[in-house]
Length: 388
Image (cartoon, rainbow, N blue to C red; front, side):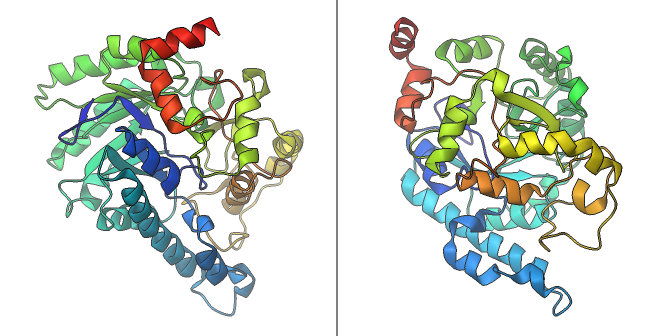
């Protein structure tokens, strides 16, 4: 896959928060010649000094009014540290990206700080990044990559960005029926809509770009449910340049989350997964662990009495719109920062464990990034896996 003037392995490691894809994972994938992706969301949790500097701030509301700013500043400092650490691990190979959710409140701050830190690419999902070219105008060499799920979204982004004299450097096409975490559909009932199928979206996007006279080649990267060598060949035969995987990388030895986090994801089966509406107002997919099962039993009651709160329970305001804080009807009613952070720490009872569908390449085994990429990219490894 050719991206940013470099020839890469056609493998992108998806960005996974909170702290699931930090510098160890992203740097290791880049070192192998792929694209490794940091996740910016509350990444201070990997830095004890930054956590200590922000500990207890939520209890000080009323005493000072800079709590949110201090937490955001800690996260931006963590972003810079993580970019530098990943760069050291990558040794100049591959590409390093950072995933910034459009739905986070400090979206612009994360984008700008990541670019100032020298990140190669900014990947944005969980919303339409119509303003990304504006935020990156002082960094013309940085790659800008939106995550979209259907051809209509692609057409909208390209038309809007063209007016800003910028085109995406690549586009991730994520299938909401197959991916994990926040999903690119308006509601759960839409997850199975055939307009999201790779066999439809990829040809439609390619046809649109031809009809629009776009001379620059924009690589397409398919995401969601990619698990085998054969999956990659099928996707490339449709016209895509590469693939993005999240869950298989999350459970590697180099993954930045706790071993118990990896075990839960590696051992989960498709029947263990549930879809629900996140506090960000988006459909989401995760493993039905104890906390999630308990939450879903009372979700309707919580939604029935939801109301706007005076402030975020953690004084963080991590999301621009939050179902819990803003009392939004039909949206999730829990603190996503709390639950994802618990999962990253390996707390099976309290954590929210996002996961995509499909059996993993090594089943429940925890293997290295190298092992995973070799299995995905070589026919010999694929044949051995089939015979096992």
